Image 1 (cartoon, one colour):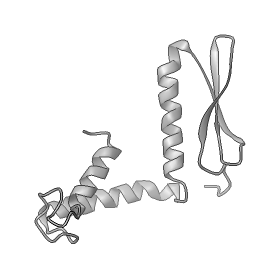
Image 2 (cartoon, rainbow, N blue to C red; image 1 turned 90 degrees about the horizontal axis):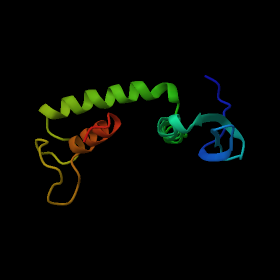
Image 3 (cartoon, one colour; image 1 turned 90 degrees about the vertical axis):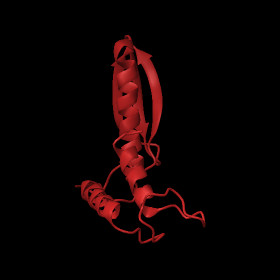
Length: 122
């Protein structure tokens, strides 16, 4: 993977409407276009969702090696599974509480929340 790419954060910019299509660019911190997308009215909802997803992923990975993200998620899942049967190293209770008496959030709960959010679960 190349180390030279448009610097984050990326933002969505509408660059115009031509021939029934709306044209957008993802513009980086250096004001250069990182990518361009066009979609017509029928594709509008899906097009916006796709572009927003790309921007979210790129901006979330700022400063990270994107090739390491799948492995990081795998490790988080393994740790969360282990914590289901063990005591939480942060709050030292069997992880079934959301917050302990001191207000410290349980590590197990934090991991489960992050994984659910990654998988878009509620």
